[in-house]
Length: 69
Image (tube, rainbow, N blue to C red; front, side, top):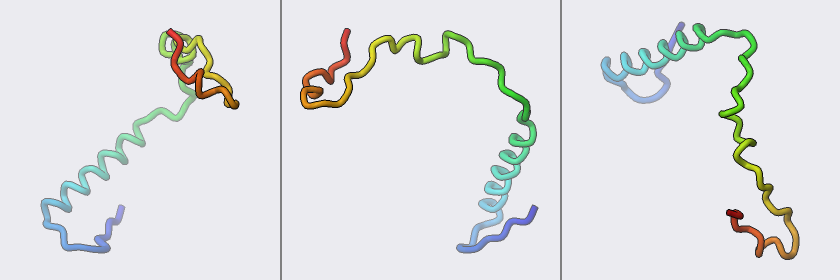
């Protein structure tokens, strides 16, 4: 992997910090499994708590824009 400084004059410490972040991200990307993800649990599905639908746009929709309790 080649990294080139295009602008500025970083100190050796700044360059080492930037390189550490880039290498850590590259290692994390390689470690991720590439297979299909497991199905989501029902408790994490946002549609289960959003039982009320938002009003459709229209001339009187401004009066129905509150969230019903």
